[in-house]
Image (tube, rainbow, N blue to C red; front, top):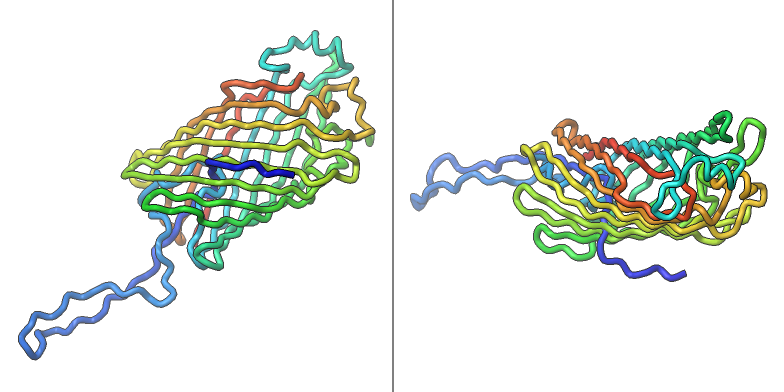
Length: 356
């Protein structure tokens, strides 16, 4: 499998570093023997002092809430994080055109009308060395889809742990306020691919909690800053390795972001982000899913391209080292889907990080 070359990328886990204590070296009280004035007191760092990696008074240094792992750490720095992501979808699209509900029912027994996915993402970052940071993340997913046959509606629900990730971040090029780092890692098949409805029937691909495969992930991130402004970009990819035990492999997922942030006051910033996402169709099939019953069962109706945009906000709190609160709302500008598929309406992200 070839991993294409990347140019720009970004990751969030936006972080806050606490300034370590400093002690003041004692200066002689009087002039020296030659009558020279005593040297002014100087700041001397405490051994093992943890210097600020990001200033707590520069909220603009942080990427929007929807961008993960946008920075690397200094040696022995930790970050704990939680992010809540809610994505709602409604209405059917094929290509870039909306599809009437009655037309969709002419081709399928039932069609989806609405979907809500709530993701709770728990993460930790640690740097054993200045030039090496690793991150662990584990999602908990709540997925709900409403389907209709034109007479009655029915809801499918799944919930549980998704696929865990182990990621490594390495600084690449850094010059002044401009920084670039690369990210590589693996996704582990900890999420279930055997979710069923109340009758024991296997649910569609979109309702499963994981991929069922070991997946490779990479990204490159660039950030820059000047006074009260900062900016950044990201390009990342997620590749599936082999097929899962059912017999299919999810499509490759590409994601790119460009953003800019600016401080309203020193500890509050606002942001704007533009997002491009390309998802491939599924290779192979789940033999228990009948494509004629519902478009969600069709492995070739999962891919597509989306362009999205949205505002965000960061708030920094210098408590217990450093706290960051962030939120972002992203809406689609354009969708071109191998449908019929549900159209995304709003993705809301809220996050918290604690760095010490």
